Amino acid sequence: MSRARKGTARWHQYMADGKGAEALMTMLAEDAVFHSPVVHTPQVGRGKVFAYLDAASRVLGGQRDFTYVREIIDGDQAMLEFTLTLDGIHINGVDIIRWNDAGEISDFKVMIRPLKAVNKVWEGMAAMLSAASPPSP
Amino acid sequence: MSRARKGTARWHQYMADGKGAEALMTMLAEDAVFHSPVVHTPQVGRGKVFAYLDAASRVLGGQRDFTYVREIIDGDQAMLEFTLTLDGIHINGVDIIRWNDAGEISDFKVMIRPLKAVNKVWEGMAAMLSAASPPSP
Image 1 (spheres, one colour):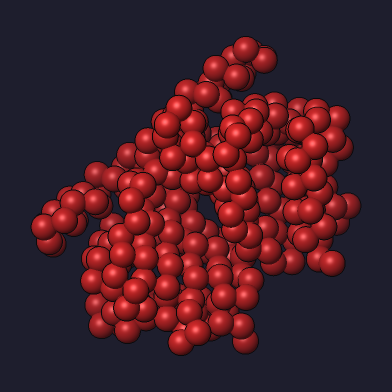
Image 2 (image 1 turned 90 degrees about the vertical axis):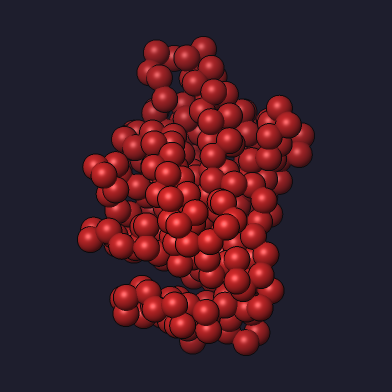
């Protein structure tokens, strides 16, 4: 099984198991980088990536109809496409993930469509991140 | 070579060759579907998909620093990631493409980040599409 296939299976397990903080932390490389759908500047380091992914998995993955609908997996990278609705707004997005030699997530990028959905996710993430810790998204 | 690998090579050729209208038209399936980064509703049929892709390849691909920076290719699908700047705004996006048995593009989805970039692309596409034909994006 390729690195990305193993990593994808582990990611789905994490999402299915109720998004445990410890499980998420152990999946992340120390020098992991997160690229938000909203802001240009990457977030560097396990702690920051954790904060964003934890917030995202609660805002998005917390919705009852959150579903992964498509996967494109190639070597050490995968694109996982998802759909959900949030306050009646259709959200369609992708997680683009890269894993390192140790099987840890080294790079995680999220993109969202359509425009309305980006604005909606932005609201939800800002509320979640400002409640959790000082840095704003 | 997999279907998506062949299709990706052909797509890059089209972009490099100056985005010829005829070349684009022959790449598209009659029942092709386009999913815009801005609007939820899919655009169905070769003519509509052509209009959007032609506009997008001019608005985005027309920028001097437009570059494909990453590919994830798997079976009949590919994710091609690109970057460019438009009026000083950093744009990062993906083309998510599926090819049919005949090697034609059957599904084409675009997502853009960050938020500022989605708004910028929206402006450019609206101007391009309203100049070209009646339907607005």
